[in-house]
Length: 243
Image (cartoon, rainbow, N blue to C red; front, side, top):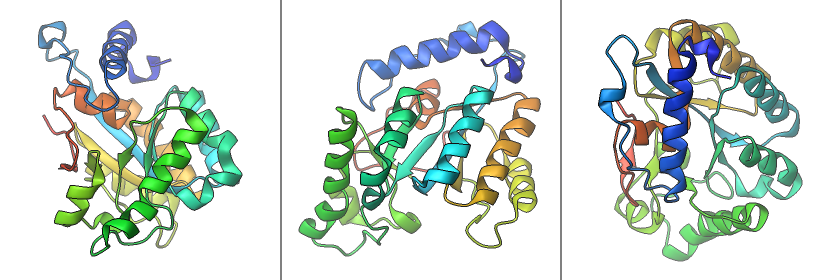
């Protein structure tokens, strides 16, 4: 499924190693991927595609279909208030190997909240996801990327930001978004998009096609950091996994 990355069996072997490491712990994927297994010419460029604000039935379904056709796994940071009516989509994400995270219940700033209000946004969403999927291990992405000391203390899991943001919520111009991401892509980057806009879905699939042609391998957040031998720690903030 990873032949589009033009790395054949070697890339498939890397993904197998990463998934084995991930299975050992919910987010502490620190098992080593032996550097000796790759020569400089063989090592693919690694990148993570992430989506916020979903799920939305029409656009998220189209995105999942397109990613499945391309053999690509992504990471979805979901809104708790939207889970009840989209449980089947959440289960599909999980079953197809995508990573799922928390983007609060109502898409609010987490900074400045009391512990009770923080839990109403994060812990309640975590519980809803656990009820749907039967497991924990969900990462947190605070809306607007806003983090303070209290957010770090209360998170209870790693906090994931991003390094490439085409601001697709603005003009919703798929061609511009694609060009922005592709021109700024680099090994270890984390791309931010939103799976609630048709233009963003179009851009995401074009980005995958163009970066595949440049030799990029798309990984979930856990896989990306495992490949870089970086242990994700609760309360710590991560915006990239540059080598």
